[in-house]
Image (tube, rainbow, N blue to C red; front, side):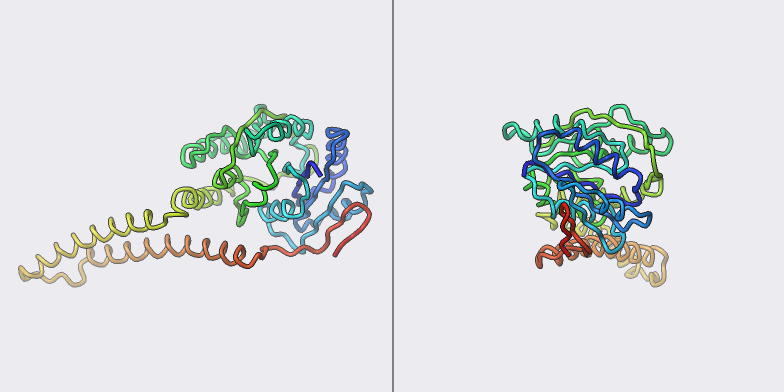
Length: 315
């Protein structure tokens, strides 16, 4: 099979049939499948998907809502295509852009991932465009992966790159950075973008702190995953030096006959050093342990209820 189009959805019942029709119209004569992953929808999305008689359609149903990252991971795992396209299920991405993106990945070995750039976004400026531009600037300058639009869900990969990525937590926002960590060669091209017709957006300003925390994790993976001592040793030496200077200063005061016990400088210094080291290292260690747990045992952090291919259903 040449192409798998992977779409994760949560409460997008009204958008299902129009998007499938648009995909079929955009890919005539191509050997492809459409992999829908339902992320625990409650509006009848699964019923709508299973009512569609299309031999190209694959429906993956989660037992509950796991989030977009794990839904994408499940769709990529199930996909059988040599190339994998991902897109949102809200009709804002246009399947007509897929053939051009696929051609850039398919022709030669120059690119492993083609990312869409929404040059004429049909979203609100205050809640979507402005925060997105700020996030794009931060990610571009801190990650070293120089793209203009990191938030566009429309992407086309080589399957081996997509399947090697670990899209845990909520790292779907950093798929391009994850692909870069796998050695992928990435380019970006302008794509169409449409206003939402049905349903409501699942995103808002509340995701800002999640983006920042995930970005910190991505920076660790990019710069220090294979050499963590470069991070911990530098931080540890810096804190140890400051602590040693404080201790020497307090020791001199003690030798001179001053009482140093209970001083705010001693208490505050000790608390900040311990709290800082504990919070940072525990957060990173837990993340690494989580990845090790799943990948070393070939486990997946989700549970699939059914997989439907064409007219048959496999449990």
